[in-house]
Amino acid sequence: MGWIPDAIIEEMRGSHQLGLFMRVATDPALHIWFGVNDIPAGFDSIDPNGTVYLGGGKLIGIPTLEVLVNGTSDSVEFTISGIDADTAAKTLDSIPPVRGVAVHMGITTLDQYYQPMSAVLPIWEGIASHISEASLAVPSDQPVSLTLSLAVVSGEATRSRAARSLWSAPHQKAISPTDRFCDGTARLARGVQPAWPNF
Image (cartoon, rainbow, N blue to C red):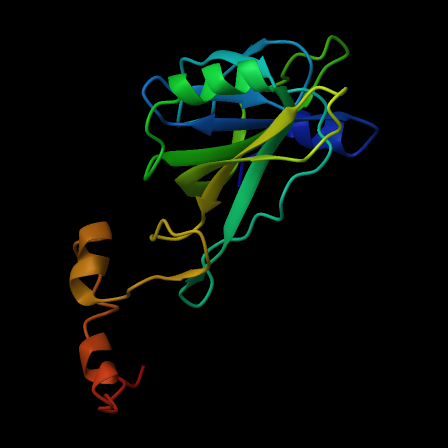
């Protein structure tokens, strides 16, 4: 299909360094990758001109990314921990509104100089829901650190729990004007068994 460049496929067949990138379409946009240094990169077909992606530190874990299946969308949280209280306060004061903005996750392989070998290939898209903060109790002689989380859903609703997507004819036509796939959903909701065409 040509979606993944041949050089990236060949690199993934052997021992390779994988770069994970996240783009949050706030104003201004947040560009972060799970690595140590800041590097220039751009999302294929989303951010072709690219920008500098900030190093988010060592990747400890990433939530399972799911797509919308059978009308149920999942909520995941991206978390940064170990932030001192002063830095966290400045960060929270400077965060632009996130509710409803697009969040893209992408991957590419890195060369021996830890630079992207291609444009970042988008593999998942979600909608930002909300930001939360948490802090564990520590003894008085130890510094307080905070954990900041960004909740993202993979469907149409921005709630902090699993959400159902409404499938209706107007909803579907807003996405694809010529698609008549959902024209009978109102009748299904009333319990009417539609006559399906024979092909």
